Length: 629
Image (tube, rainbow, N blue to C red; front, side, top):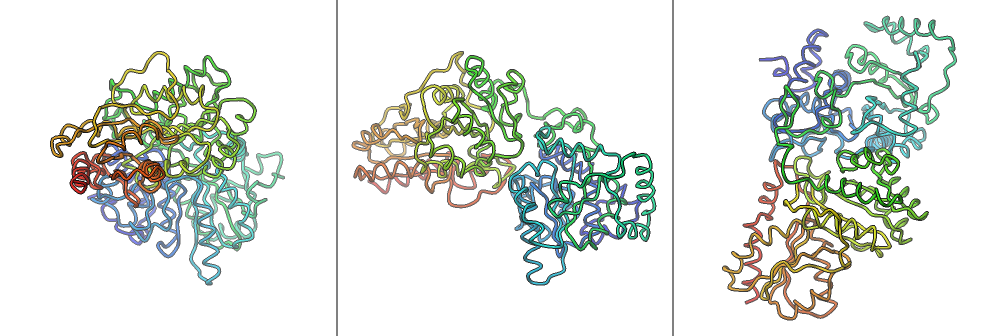
């Protein structure tokens, strides 16, 4: 039995000797590598924060003290130390298993749920304000990656920090990476800080504190030596101090002893304090260090080689690759096309454009709001910006989509991948709300392709035929194996496509749901003795009302199928059109119910659980048919 097996709570951790802590850190890294090699997960971020997480739990007393991790994809060590060791940890990101992020319903030690960047500082500030108001004494600690400071919400929290509380501890976990290499002025500023020989001139109270604690003399000697070797002792005040945060650092993020000394001091501080901690993403696993983007969030992999256990040489291309290659092709002949990403070049497929046409590629950092406004400014100046963004991250730019783009009818194309489920990541990453969110906005055109080639055609249509904002949504992963044409063609805007002729039951399917409709059509016809037609809707907005109303005149049942939330979604658009035209035909809507969908092994398992397997959909339609006859 290893040392990790003896840890069931942070109390067990505090009993360990310094020598045992090093052994524990090694065992934790091995456990993370072993489990993620089977389940997939965020490898690099977690390997980089092992010592930091250990030190935090040795110094602070959760759940009374509150630890918040920005994004929280670096929470695996935290979970191992807070009662989710052993079998529970081996279930991470699996159906009925624990989440890969902080989750308030999972443990009292998870103070605040997360999954998107830039939330920790604002939430921690709110907790600190609430604590002060009720005269509590718990400590609030926000662990923020350096990339979190490119988020607008984090900067907004900094602006309010000094007037909100006098007691808050911020850990700046600086590894120079978010998902891709950090970009922008803040990244350059952080580099300047850590390359200054010794930025932190120790205040007298910190100097006195370190003299009293074991090992503190080492820190003092380092300070004195660095100051002797530095010609300029008058270091300019840090950006953080201008916001009212006392800055201390840089600090070795892989020395538990050093971290504990600074954390103990932070507990005594009578004003908000930031500890600048330097860590190495992927530490302890060379494969992850050498492939930081791949091992930020990895699929199951071979531990020795790092190669994915899923074949990367599949014949069917991913939607993200089709998007990236198509955009390159279009941008080669139209220099006004500019691809924009919010730190997700590789995940969205924009890395193709970044490599082929770097002058037509922009990475704005983790800042979806700015990416959208930036695109609006481009469009207002005659460019054709294409914003590549995950569906769930597009939620962060909702006001910009309405106020700055659609209101002004600007030609901006949003390509939203991960529409539908992102199974192992769970509720924070599922793209189920985009149709309902953007359908009510005037001037918006909303599309979803049935397959890879149709995605290319929709991109071409948006950039050549639509003189306003357009949104294309498509799922994560492989298409259905349709060959993409050498040259995309424009689609008639707002027009659907008949895939199967029928009359009694008309299925209007959106995007990837067309394949489910085709798969059950014959069985449905046999079960109901009705002819079954299938329409590839293509457009959510404008909806093909002409064809819909024509079919409604003869059909006994219209079925809508969408990989999105039912409330306000594609099926709602069909219902509204029929109601406005006073067509009384019954409608059966198939989609995701009004609930947040948890994480699971696969899309198939989650669909089966929530009534969206092919068998369940077949039965739902049959029941609706039986109610009409």
